[in-house]
Every structure is written in structure tokens, then in C-alpha cells.
Image (cartoon, rainbow, N blue to C red; front, side, top):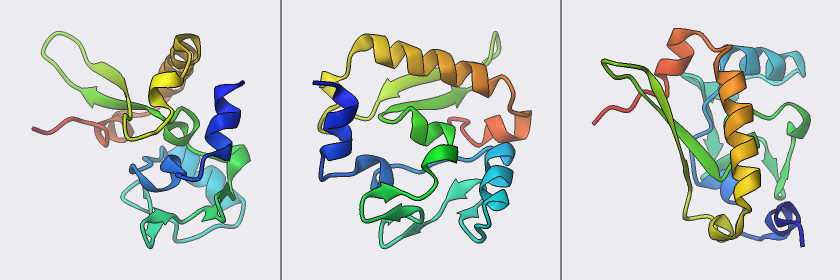
Length: 133
């Protein structure tokens, strides 16, 4: 069975409740172009009663333009600026019931796609992900 089918059929809906979806300025513009307003604060999707503002009965209202952080979930990334080289760190959200069943190939595809997209972000957008101990 395809793991994505398992994810879609899961009743937990981790991606809509469990993490903060960060938006690039480009993603904000794309969502606004669809007529949506008042959906983010400081480049983070808002939540209503603990769920993503775009979650409607377990379905994503912006599926075709959903943010990068939503597309690759349960793969999550953080940004770590270092003295030698800035670096994105990718890891799995282990609160997702299917996290340990996801094929490694799919995870690698998501990381590759994410890095390609992140190269287009400006420094301010990237700093939203900056790890702050």
C-alpha cells in the first residue's frame, strides 16, 4: 500500500494540527491570489481551535498551492546558521503515526525538492526557520 494513501486515510491529521507551517513570501502571495485573507501571522499559518485555518473536515482547502512545509510533512526542516556554512537540517516528526513506515526514497525526494525551493527564498524568509537555543 502507498504510504500517502495511509496518511490521507489516517484520522489523526497530523499535518493540520501538530506543527507550525511556515510560509515564504511567494507562498503568501499565491494564497492571497486565491482570495484568502487573514490566514497568517509573521509568516506562520494561523490555527483555529488547534487546527490549520485551511483544514476543512480533514481536507486541505489550498491543496494545489499548499506551503512547502506542508508538502513535505512529516519531514520537517530547521535552519542552523553556522560559522562555516549555513545548513538546513531535515528530520521526521515522530508524532506522526506513519513516520517510521515512510519509504526512505520518498523522504530523500522531499529533501531534494525542499532544498531546491529553499534556494529561492530570501534571507529573511530563511531566518524564520533559524534555530534559537
